[in-house]
Length: 624
Ligand code: GCU
Image 1 (tube, rainbow, N blue to C red):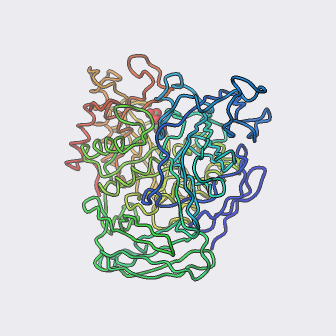
Image 2: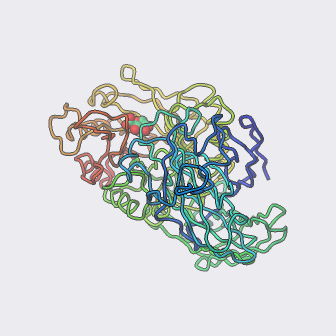
Image 3: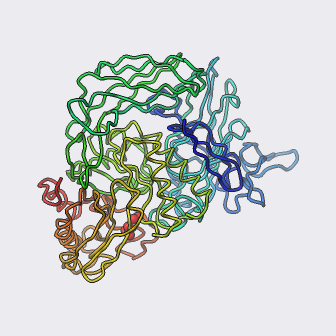
């Protein structure tokens, strides 16, 4: 067991035991309870009581007196108590009432549901009633797929937990707060951006607030499987002839040493019983029979059954090997070239935070039509449906925590937050074969505090998951003459280097790219962002900015440049689809949207889409 302690802020330690988040005593500034105590893996594979649907809501505008005291602490007697005003008689009391308040759909951001909240950043309170019949010898957890940005949870007037981070799941035990029959849950969500937040305050996407992913009640036996990692053993070298050893662990919360855990993968001839150690963790290595490895061509998933005591869980897991060899990326021992796109979690057609089966189906329809085999989920973990679909569709994934550009890298409490967000991301998706990269950041300033912070974080990602590759998207250098020299020391900490560059849009002319000579680290390089804006339907010369023809011209010259860089192993144009960003304010051209999409937000394909569709089909740029 590796103990990793962080002195966080004005308070205690966060102890993250190797491979699992067993407890977080950290109390970060702004959170009275610290992050939730457990993190249930495979919740979407359990039968749960969904709390999706209509929730009453009340807006608590700054200074949000229903939530915070004048000193900024969380109130114990705020709206979380869900009391009702004495309207007709009796003494005057609190002036709020959920019972007669309007409703919002959960999951979903509030910005695109209530026009009066479109640009609102602050606290919105959510409340819903639900019936519950406790089952003896079980424990109950409230599971929240994501809530942007800070959340504070009460059940039946009891303060339960807090969470910070707008894009990763959390679970809070509510066993002792629930009662037979009528219950209610109240959640305050504060979407206010903070300088010491992750991300910080200056972002180039829309800060959609709210309970933006599924909410459910999970009933579990007193001892239950809360975490597992089942993967193809990562040998020192890969050989397809003996790629048949599975390894990992199953963690049983509350289990005594020696508790039995059964691991069955019928189609792979695996049926073995494990025993937990003193920490409830059962590690294993087991031979599988005639394993078909996961790949874009054969996205094979196996039914994996886990049983321990009264708990059972079945997941669908693919097995594959990903590693680098010099400047190549090897999937199952074969060199690959990633043909993809960046995607924000913007819902096609309807806009808003993508969070439904329909949204995910639409995004993957675009990717398949593009002939893509890869997607960078920018700049934060997306809804879990994205990785589930990528597993099934054979699309490889770059997953990233939102350390975007300017972050308070000099603050230990910010490192503590980044560490548990990284842990939440890895824990949720480590069993998804489609995820091949963990990214620790995007376009951060090259200075010693940031490089140390992100180097530590990259090493933490490797410690949590030694089977995947660690990357980050670097910005710069600017082109000097015809030279571009990438010498960011952060590259030393990465397995694969993402290089963002906008030659032809933010700097120089498109045709200048033809003569640019790049000096890059001798590692696999992805051009992780490149492109130009175009408003769909605007046509003109190749020098007319925001014309579709101009966007194509930028890419055509980019391809000439990229084809001269031997270690490029992937193309990731910015961006699959136009997305909302309040900083994009040219009327009639942007109207609050970043227009670098290959597709407009209402699903209309631009000429550049068809350029990539053809390039990817013919594999005419870059080589494996
Ligand atoms: C940056 C950044 C993106 C941003 C893009 C742009 O590279 O990573 O988040 O949207 O450029 O300016 O359009």
